[in-house]
Image 1: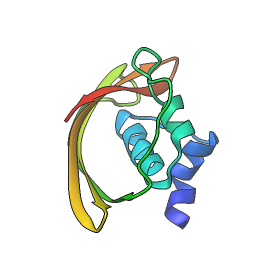
Image 2: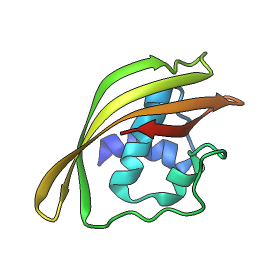
Image 3: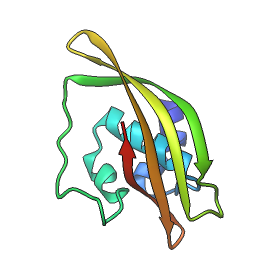
Length: 116
């Protein structure tokens, strides 16, 4: 649990900030893994944010692979990250692949949307 506390846990708690689109995407993956819907909604761009979010408690996220990234650096205003997230659901394994789009406003990265 030390890795979570040193990395994404600090971002979720608001004591650190995701400095790149990939860092935000990784923190959002971790938020899905720990069930932190408050952080997921807060890191979602206001133009596309749903009013609420319910996570499936049976789904356990088990791994993340970064497949591609475009832009999204500390001095960019937009970025894309393509990833593959692995999960277990009801004893069965699954994979979700998405190309996510991010936007930075006032120094803060936000998830905008993604294509599965």
